Length: 447
Ligand code: SF4
Image 1 (cartoon, protein in one colour):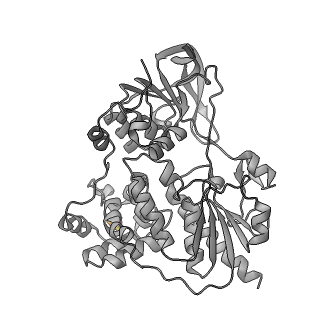
Image 2: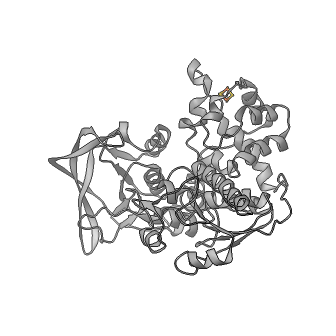
Image 3: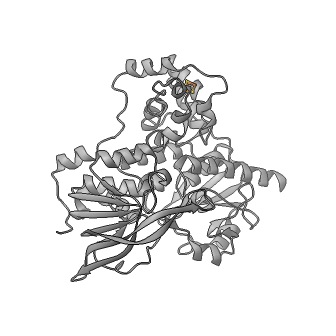
């Protein structure tokens, strides 16, 4: 067994990482689906969208070939509506709420229609938004992820001059660096960021990290307000023996490498175990398989009823040939010559529900051992505790505490994953909009 890169031909990589949700092949195909929509009053699809996109309106605009109007309907509610059409778990949001489900019929393919409506607008940078003349206010945004970019765009439209400080060399955050490449390509992410910037009034300073190249104190002095959207990024450790062995890695780093280095450059094992059952675990497992791993096994300490990923994501992993072991929790990783060779797991059973309502896994006396050469940890993310405490930001377990987007420090606002601990892209976009509203109100009150 060995961990190696370059396992497949260029064509195989291309095929394995091609778009999992291809667009409509023809305009007629889009129109057929758009015309099925009942244009519901008080539409449940809109209510279930965290950014409240007016779904029946944008679908109606498609049917009348008003593509600019349709794109504007979507993007004015969600400036990352193009990317969200590819990465949102729509089965538990808009499409899950579509009334066709009640009639046991296929839900309207809202995501596919949303993609149809936005794709051209983003690729061709349609000038859909006007920016008001500069009002002299300057805001620093920390993080060019969905929350930061959404906040920056909403502020810029109101005439605020925004500077975004991003620690990576590209914008997009989770969308660019943390999602399976077969869902959204790096090229699309770049187009989406450029589209957002095309409104004007937003400058992104790359390779600038809070706590390293810039300080909160400095930003407070130089800007009229600061918005923190720095996300969560540190992979949670398993705290078991053998974690230091070669071949043990974390899903965030693994996915980051796939997105930044190119498929053939990322090493993968023959026998891969992935710990966890969230979206990141699924993205790591499926991509390990698509990079050429022979066997991939997802290990989760609860059952399918408690898994954080959606059924749809689970099905992607199953279709890719990933195995799943439920009710197993890592106990130790053993190896030889410094390399991981076995993952031993405790067999669990479920007890009473915990505070989150999910039943608590309890260790039994039984164990199982898997033969492995690679272990990918996807057991959640840790907040930036040092950054938060050194800046005296109120928090709850490392998640920033806010009151209508405002932190405990006057003029400092926050939103997205650094507040909620890691939710969907669409939640972060809404948080960014809320942050912009709070900042504008802060300016009004101080007049
Ligand atoms: Fe159309 Fe379904 Fe939304 Fe009703 S719930 S407006 S049918 S997409």
